[in-house]
Amino acid sequence: MSLATLTNAGRAAFALSLSQQPLHIALAQGLPEWEDTEAPLPDTVTMTALTNEMGRRVPNIVGFVVPDEEGGIVISEGLDANGEVRTTRYRMVSEPTPYLYMQVAYDLTDAPSGTIRQMGIFVGSTVREGLPPGQRFFTPDEIEEPGLLLAVEILQPAIPRNPQVRQAVEFVLPV
Image 1 (tube, one colour):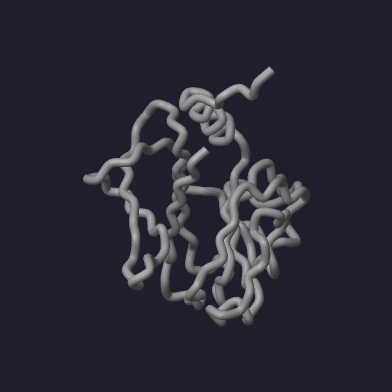
Image 2 (spheres, rainbow, N blue to C red):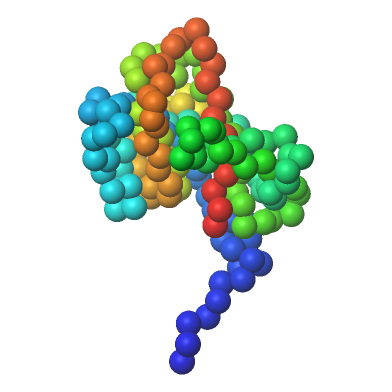
């Protein structure tokens, strides 16, 4: 018996299922030594939690995208060998695709100080009972069950958190 191939429609089904679960995008301070580009970084594939999490927020937008050279959603893929920024462009679509899109805009009071060295997407998180209705940002002590760490990124360079700047983040998660 051979292994079955996961089709694009199957990947879109997984993305649809994920989009219907509780999702949070978390900020973490990580470790200061991660800012040294020569320092070894932890194995992100085996991570189950963020290092020194500051809090997490419910995404403002969860949807589906497709690659499109003219698309208005631009995601950084990092730097190439020449130090140039590599990007991929996407556009929103209404039907499920293998590309799950999430956008979050942190309020000015969400973790207003510290340095962001790590971000993660959690699925299946639950928050403590009794929190104010409509609350969208949760500190670590307000999380009942952390859920599963679906994706993680170590930011180089790190981003200083500034209470005068409303930071927005976009993720495209190929499923």
